[in-house]
Image 1 (cartoon, rainbow, N blue to C red):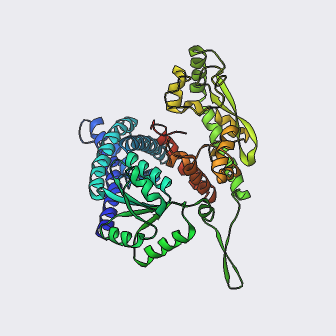
Image 2 (image 1 turned 90 degrees about the vertical axis):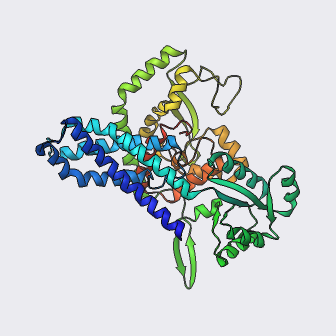
Image 3 (image 1 turned 60 degrees about the vertical axis):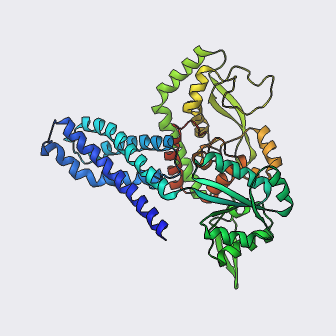
Length: 458
């Protein structure tokens, strides 16, 4: 309970401090602009639109999850702050013009933008230190099939920056000897997990249960944890994600879950299509000059066409050709066949490396959106070769094609470049089951952030 209260206090402090940092940046900008106390006719408009600016700050801080930064890397915080600063500045300009407060000096917006970067980054980095201190190193015990436990063990050890330390695993009895040979700590098997979990709970450990478990064993563990008030985190199976937001139906005195399809409601499809057309059209107009300049540079840099068209699997398995700026040498796969690109791929051109790191190579896909072959938000379309390959090892993989493919998606803003196809599938299906226009807007805003993080991938 104490830790829970401390977490709430830190989260509230994050938001309150973020709001204060932005307003301090505006006030300091006024003093810099007027070399001292600003005149009332200039400072007054800021006071009057201040509540509306505060509302915008709260919205953008909430969208980018700045109330909790304990698991964010520093690049993630910096990129979030940069985008938040940009959005707050644009919104503040729009608000000041809407209310006709033309005495609000334009130079103040520019000065405050620079100060916001300094104040917000400083605040959230300091708070991140206190959040991580309060969090400490949490010891984790993983429950599940050995190979899956081993993979999760390595991921937590490599990617959690010391926030989570795997204390050991509870696995099937026949894997205990194999695990010991590889040096993984075994704290028990399914037959004696209850004593081990009860002991570990007293030492404040975290339990994560993998999805690939015998249903009887899984339910036994869940019931045991409920009975003994033990915190347990479960990696969901695909069917459990498909049950998300199911309708509760009653037939006589029998309660049922109504499992709908993954296709969107017709009304939602219309709203989504309107958003796609309006936003992609506006983006193409605003980015017309950068797109033309990029095309010329690609042509100068290497031989071959400016655009690269490639077959991808779209909604309901339909094949379409995706548009991208060419980032590789011409005929890059002539001798190798379909191969997934790597971080240091020799086939990528000099200009192509820059385009990939900034994701500018994806801009032509706005044409696919206008044509109706893609949406702005949805599962990333994959090549037929890899769809067939993944479908053989992940039988549920084909379900992601029940949704229109997107330029960006939930898997891209919540996952990483190294996220496995199976984990990306979970995000894609969760997106389909919990779709709303507001969620699309949130994902688009979060996409702006990941454009500045090289470890992420669209």
